Length: 161
Image 1 (cartoon, rainbow, N blue to C red):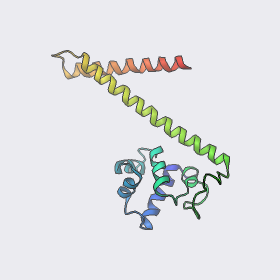
Image 2: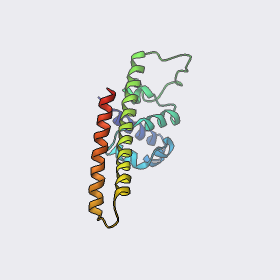
Image 3: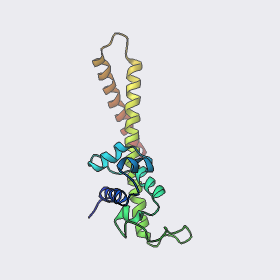
């Protein structure tokens, strides 16, 4: 079974073959992401996220989003997508799409939270670092602060459950 990543690469190669785009760099620019992200996806270092999917849905309306997300149907729509009034014909597909998008968004939020935690720890370590400390001491203080922040975050998420 093809994965979302594989289908995205098939789509990109198809768009190049029909001269809709010149290359991955142009594709990335059109859908609003960096060329580096497409390279990472192509080389298996990252999976496509919500921004990639939204960009494709917005800028390449001829692409069957069901095919992209689920592998069902044809890659290119034979007609325009259904209007809101027509509704979605298969509620199972819609549920699965919503589930996939939720998972993607959740993973992106986790990365964002981890990035913010690290940034806060580094800032706090810099604020508490005293004049005359070595870079190694400041690094150790930053790592300690990261550990504390993670423990606090884990305690907070346990308390919420």
